[in-house]
Every structure is written in C-alpha cells, then in structure tokens.
Length: 132
Image (cartoon, rainbow, N blue to C red; front, side, top):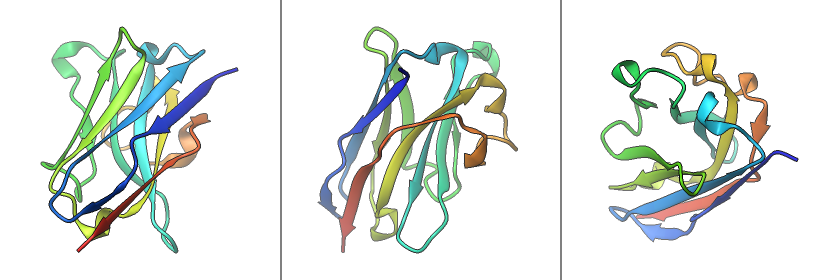
C-alpha cells in the first residue's frame, strides 16, 4: 500500500524555522512529482512546493508558491526515501495543516503543480502553528 507519512509539524514563534519530512513507501517517488500543500482553517488547499527527480537536472528546480518563495526549500534524501520542506522565517500566516502529495511526474510544470486535485497520493498531514 502506498504511503506518505508527514512529520515535523510544531508550534513556533514568528521568525522561527521548522523542517517537515515526508516518508515515502511503496511508491517510485523518483519518477513522480512530489509536492507540499497546506490548508488553513476556512481556506482552500494551497500549493507550497513541488519537485520531480524525473525531470532532467538541467530543467529541474523546485517550484514554490509566491507566499513562500525565498523562505521555504524543498529537498529529498533518496537513500532514505524522504522528502523535506525546510521552512525559515515563519510567519503567522504560514499556520496550516501541511500535506505531502505525489502524482505523475508530468504534474511538475509551472502551470500544473499547484492544482491539488491532480495528485493521486496524500499523507495525513502535519500541523504547523506560528504565533506572533
């Protein structure tokens, strides 16, 4: 059974940092588009970052949502089958449930990656709370 398990969510002060992890099992995630989404209460789910190892290195850089660009960094550890989201300079508006998602590698283009309904696999989420 394909599984995505997020961890690392916590409560932090504004300006702080967190690193979220997404442990991937039973998925060939290196051939997929891996993404992070978040959803705050009363708001729609928002694309945070996405990346695919299946895209040639020369064209392969993570995509980031405008609200997190320059503060968040997506990376992965292939040996551990883990995808990370390093979050720096956190703001109260970053407070949300954060989800890891996986879908076809073709999702990882500039126009398609933020659309959550395209992703076939989802984790259960990890809560991030940022206080001012």
